[in-house]
Length: 209
Image (cartoon, rainbow, N blue to C red; front, top):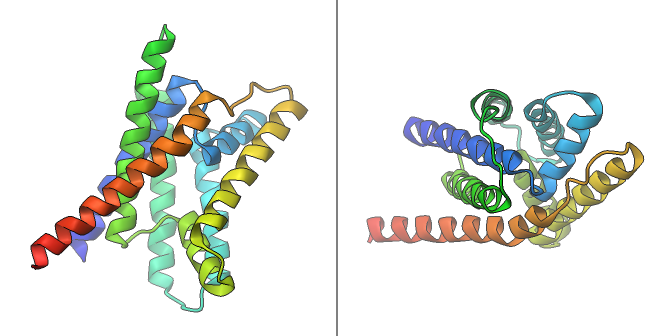
């Protein structure tokens, strides 16, 4: 249990680093992060802090919808998303800030690397099942309550995030954060997550056989 918990924290760290790299690339970000950046630009709150606040809202929704009352789990999830937000802030505003990406190809490479890192880390966090992300947890509960698939709810959140990000960009004269990187991450991120989960499950089966 403790070993998997520490592994989960490590992969939360990797996820934050991957997200920070996609932000640095500045060619568009994943659906949810496009909303985070738009809100951060309007409020002048750091993007990692916005990520933490929105994840906390999903955690509260998960607590309301969940039939189980696992308060220790809720606390650990809260601390994990707080940690994730701080990792994103640290790498985005301190570690990667001096990095100069002066051509598009370099930006694209950094974006792909960041997306793969974030996808791998997310796949491992989901596979370990100790510190699940609040958004995925909400989608799982809604799927169980309604009978609709997990994917429908997850894509619904992505669609809502992209739409609201575009509305905010147009309303507040912000740059458009939904760009080619958003489309690329739609396929690459989910693909890496699925591949990571499949490989982890195959590894477990091999260990137990």
